[in-house]
Image (cartoon, rainbow, N blue to C red; front, side, top):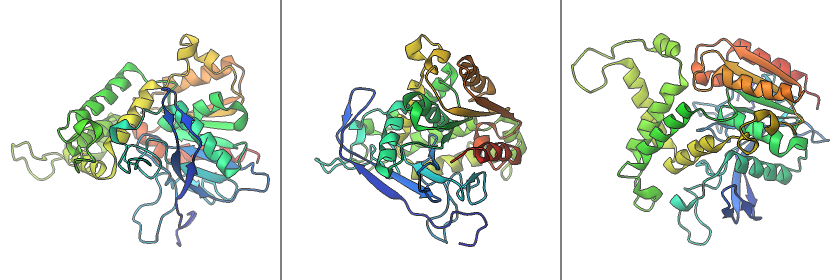
Length: 374
């Protein structure tokens, strides 16, 4: 591959775990698989590893391509690679697909070892805490005791935060981007509407649609369309689409505006690629995460034992995970006299800004990552 600063052609790997994993719900996974990819080289002291935690619809394919004909690279390819902000000349980068996912890790669409049928609705509810604990198992599998950093945006940022709470001695830095310590009631409401669109789809069959050889496509389409509305800012929507007419006004309920065309395209694309049961579980994990809950709502007490240094980044146009939510994390860390850097980036893209190759944003990440000793 000739693309400049690319990690090149990559391949996913699978780690199998035969030791049971007890989940926060009390249910037990007797065994499970995690699919992951790595970029760069692990140094002799195994001190340069960086874990990337994905957001709701993400997966292990963070950077590079699977073959030269691939149209698209990994979902954070603009960030990860030689001489990019997360420089693979310096760091050994790990991306994985979380438990409950639909890209190879054990999840609802996986085959149960005994029945040889998909788990379907019987796959347990997983939480951010469960993901972090399973990720720690992956590090053990790779022989890595301590991470140079854990990085994540949105739901991935919640995982990075949880890493500092659950395994404070196993990471030196946490980069929490476009995230929050918990969801607001409004965010939970968006998730519930999306789930209801799926659950009430006649093709859902209580989560066991695999046996019926169907897909709750209509529900997934609506869920994704709703999601895209919340990921973009009003300014970004206006700049990209405005009130542009697709062709000409036909006075119908067909696609009339460019915005409608975009939403339907995104909905159809997502429904053809993503598993509905996984979507339900990912949104539920978002709802449940609240590290302050066990401390009477006091986030400062919840973060009292963290040891990592932090970079917290927010975006001015992100109304779903607003800068105020990031500043809650910063305040709680400062209350505990932890080392934290905070950047609030002016950007038009809304919540999706954390995925964009914004020069100012990337310069902030580059400067922070360069100072990390390995």
